[in-house]
Image 1: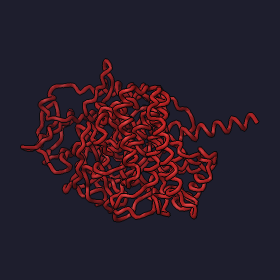
Image 2: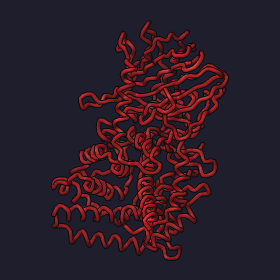
Image 3: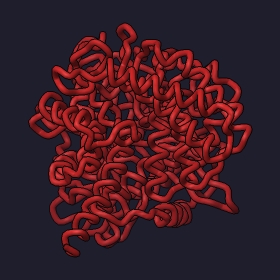
Image 4: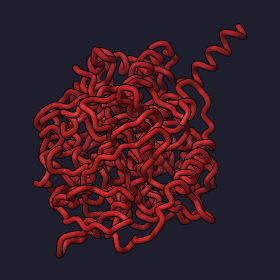
Length: 630
């Protein structure tokens, strides 16, 4: 494959030592493949260290990401004391290519999960396809297939079927279906739950390995059709990203972010997960480890902004359809997040079989935030409907009567109550200014929808409510002594979430109160590496955390809307440079080391980057045009 067909944010090789193959890798050393039902993380050393099937939130089959000894992995790499490796995506696709070189020999490893459309139906069966091909000289390749289903709790038996592959059946009374490895390669002396082999390939020779859910006898004598599925999958991704309407600065990285976000959509329902991983820590060795494999209303609705801004209205509409189905006529049962098929009980518990990334435990599944009261959700849902309406989708009377009006009724009763806020604090609830702002947004957007459709019966009452909320925010949420909007009523702490105020049109970015809030944020929350802490206040949890990347992109938006374009560009370039070699973002960055922290890749961060890139690009182009015409 020619290098012109491969894109990467940083085209650089990394030296991999054999002695490090069973060690933890930096979070930044991973790429992602998927089929919009599940995802796999592929390390730059050729090891798949995280894979849950059949769904994003299923128990892991490969979990070395969270336990390098017991988690399990599927690794393909050169048999050498050390080798060079570089990763890149095939241009405009989610097909990942890892290139290896050892002395005068070289090979490529192509990883993908098939997904393509047949007669308007998305085909995605959860298969993992891995093709290793020698591209220069002769090279010895090691293959290690080590499934550990149930978050590392099971060591399956191994069954060999001649000419077909290997089966790893589930133990008795297990709920999983076992897995199979379809391959012509014979592994010598398969061990308990593990097969290992070394094969020599000459230039032009290749080997395909396919992993499926289910035991081997269900797949015997079947051609896995890797070549056909690779071609169809390539065409699918190229056709999808070809619909993108963005062509400004940071284009390549914006397209990669869009492709990453698409992987986080659960295609059967349209739900959008926050991240495909659980328990990657916000502090190495700490306990701030959360399961993000669910659909947060807030995160997903913000992703709708990003999809719409790039011209992907189908994804935005699909999510809104799912949201309407989940909450229309059930506003009394509103909660911050749902499972990907609408599950409401996401009770949090610890997995004792995995030690955690770099011994950062506990490893959690489920998320107790599902029980929290988060006031902003009411406004965010209405804003998502309004945003979609502005992009051509209508709001019919039933949606207005059965969803929007009940949401406003609930807001009127609850907007004065303290809540857990956007950051889901696990201490006492507070009167967060950010949450009050979203209450105002909800009423404001409901008024705009009503005016546009002639639903006038509530307008006067809603207008008075909107004014009351705004007046209270200005009187209790802005501290004149520090000249800034604050985290909560009575506090003098800052909150980076307030940087969203201009973006949701609560206040102009050039308003003196907002301008001084940005200045205080630059003074107090900006790190030496130009990252932004979300806050520095106590939140009821032990330990510390990194700087949240999305906050930097919110700051970029604020500066852009205020016309402070040079400041915005510098922070944008700095934050964007902390994507990994593939253009993928984590949740947080360690402000001291610059290392990635938190779950990866993170939808919230990619959404923030896309929105900031679109807005800043337009502003820079407009400024350049005005300068040329002056």
